Image (cartoon, protein in one colour):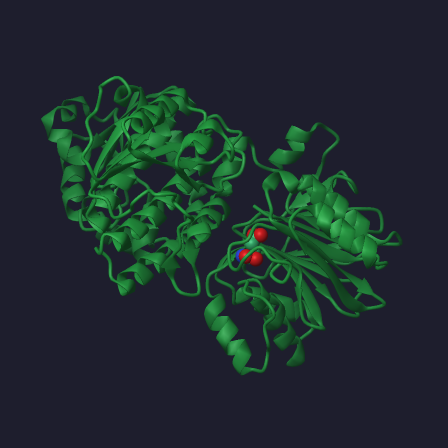
Length: 573
Ligand code: GLU
């Protein structure tokens, strides 16, 4: 989660203010930073790898006086964290900062190179500046040029755009990454969140998915995803930091759910080389991915992430895998195969049982690999090697974005193991890496189902028991769903392997028991469908999450398609 700031200023030099705002965004993590301002109408940039202090040194040596500009803290996904890859990216007409991932950057880049553009960085983001530049050349207005460019971008993004020679326009756009507009006195601001603009104003407007905001000194115009003029509520933050951080989300858990396009994207891109569509693992310090077997250990949500990975590692990489709950594992004196390694999954990196299990494995001479969110935590430090998840701080008590970030890292690990074991050809690896890179966009699409999911939640709220069913890798997802419901609503919920239904719990099902089925349209779909039929025959209510069908269609299925997928439920949801 990098940071974006934009200032359409009145009289004070923008650069120190941009840096001040970036400092507030440091908590999100970054590896380089930069600003661009308008110096007598011309775009001037200052950028530096590493900490903000380096950017300040650069600005000290080469100061900027312009009153309007944009700034960025980058957390690299495409291209190394160098000064040359740091944002803003610019042509002589336009400068942009971008947060997120542009999925179709390669085809756009090729197209723009053919049109005579030359690229100065290895980032996906630079295409945005050239695309807008190209649109300007063809005679479009600044607003049109930016909008037309944004409409061509696939992926997840928050963007701020500054134009050469234009002191009264700044454009922001968001899809999958957050962006807020700050309203000042004769000044306007853009920021990744309310904290970024908090040094300048307490009045903040949060953009919604697909919004484009056109700022001038006097007003803000917002166009929604359909290009229609839209009104967005202005919030006034007089209160504490927590309220500011939550933005217009009701609580941190909701905010963190909506961060997932960004957090999964960041984690995936830590391991995927987007140019070569290949997995690149960091130095794993002797962990042999070509081993014969592995043990995957975690607690709660992290354990379920490990269980999903068990299916993947076996099916995709042909690796024999055993998963266990850390608290069980550490007391059962487990035995290992000779050529084996162990994986420990933990958000905090401090989970006591997981740590004890790691220490046990080390004592037994097994190499240990940590999938951990908090750098320098104990599990991080004690493991032989680590695969960081880049979910950022998780404040909500029930884990959400950490789970999907763990799955992202474990999916990359699966592909790397598949390659190491000779189970995947380079074409298969490219196909899987490509599919992985589509995840942030698909999550963005899935999040659009919130109104439908909310309506389903209304029907669940009075239930005494809820069953979650799934098969294959969807089975641990069902377990995780049941855990979430228990933690958050105190409703009793059970996750079950759909095929186990007939061996017991089916007796529990009646009209009073909602059943949530995780049923992606995969090889096991037909089998899951017959389990759903069993439930329907008992009068149980099946709530199928449309969100999962996006995997099949690459978008939300319409009613007709849903009818085809679930013939016996008709209109029922
Ligand atoms: N994908 C962009 C890059 O690698 C933006 C990364 C970010 O969100 O900071 O430069």
